[in-house]
Length: 251
Image (cartoon, rainbow, N blue to C red; front, top):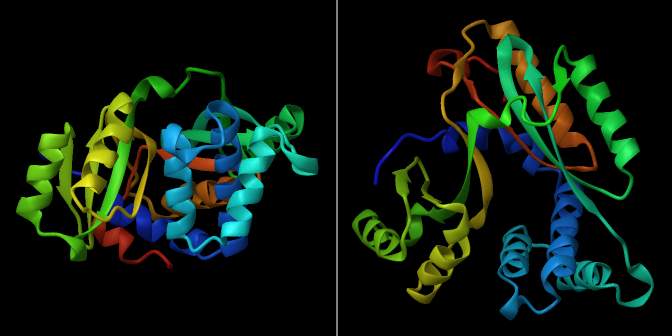
């Protein structure tokens, strides 16, 4: 159970985005609403909703916001709202593959916006299946390193059925099969492990190394622009940037 991940790099790239608190709350609210719509408003019987609420609490989202999001999903009151989940695929400069997960109440608007973002940032929006074959869907759990020792978390993750554990700079990154995410996360919580987040993710089978700094900047600008769109929930890519170049890129 070992492997190499880009958690520390990904976190660095997303630092500026994670600082946009209002936007993060909006994305979390959508996920809560979608989870409540698909599996009911009781987190005890809805693992996806439980996971979404955990993420909201980790981001210090007020309880009132959480409750409103649940009611929007279950159709209670005047706030009922319907979101469709859509996945877009395309290419960034340098042949980097990109997957975009969106949640929208207007498919036509969102499709036009995503296409425009790709075009303006020297990318190309592709058809369904054009890049997803390069990735595998996995579950991802992040545990703060300060909360538990490496040997203990390795033992617990293995017992719980995790596929891989990577020791990053300030966190343990645990990878699971998609259908084991909630079970592994629940087993860790029952063992007293503090989890920072748990979610589904796309992990590339192979990465594309971009050694040209200007091209790397273009890829990051495209990913940032996609992340900034109100309808976008997650952005994944198979971008690989050499460490020496990474150190030169602006924060």
